[in-house]
Picture (tube, rainbow over the protein chains, first blue to last red):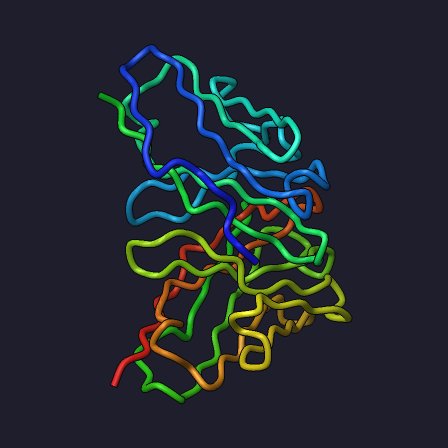
Length: 110
Length: 117
């Protein structure tokens, strides 16, 4: 089970928008609408921010949005704020009945 | 409030065993699938295992298959991970994670397992 592919790092200035990609295969991202995204601050547990590719759990800011096209899912954060600086991970269910995470993307707010 | 509290981590020698526990509260534990996810120091998240709500089905990542066993006690609202034949590369923070039926959603704070001689 190979990890989903994410850029190692992205950056943006406060108020700007950034997008993080998550590329898998037809055996995971491309097969199901079951991509989720997580935010992790240093030393903390991950926080669930997107599920089924595009949906936000209750309480998550609408500045976070998700999309999917083919084997690639994306997370967009609009109106960047300092507290958005964190690591972000995608996750997908697979045709093997397992789950696979992306390698993670470090977001720096300049 | 959903709470997941892991325990049982520590230092163990290569080839040794350890059992992790995860005490759940704030939700009806017996209704949910559960996962274990780990994170090596400075590295990314890696899915380890999943168990059905009634314990009838389990599945593992290839890296731990045959060495780790996930189980649960719904009467005690507790999830377990029995880890045998531990390797240096198993060193990680281990998280207990609830599955919402859409995705892994609620995470515990994690427990650190260090495999070293």
